[in-house]
Image (cartoon, rainbow, N blue to C red):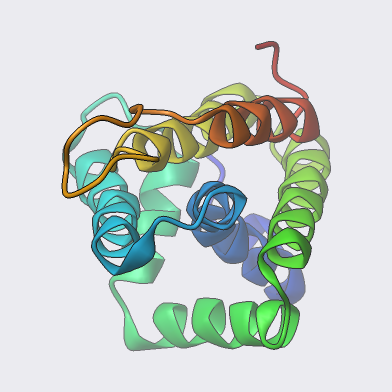
Length: 166
């Protein structure tokens, strides 16, 4: 069973960061104003809650979710995001998120090969959930598309970075 004890503190930090960056990458691809940002942020958080309640979630996913429930886990993730993302424009944010996801995918493949497909699939699901959280390009909720071309391209980049097929 793969859990936090299988990783160094730096590796675990990368794993925690990857969960948040899966959603941030999509948000940065097509910034959608305050309401859209709130919806997308909520979608990312709700993915954690859904994973906790899902009996099919693997031990690594459950371990990550459990760590996000602790002040220490939240602090580690928040500090890691701050180190990597503060002061960057949306394109730089997206690129950093994609790179973090690539690194996390390689790490999981190496340290937890049995859990890798499920964990990387979960990261991809978080990204998809965030992409579908808010319409892009409309006016006052009228028109627009559920997932913009920029978000679709980012989802493809995320899949590629994680070594998943589209």
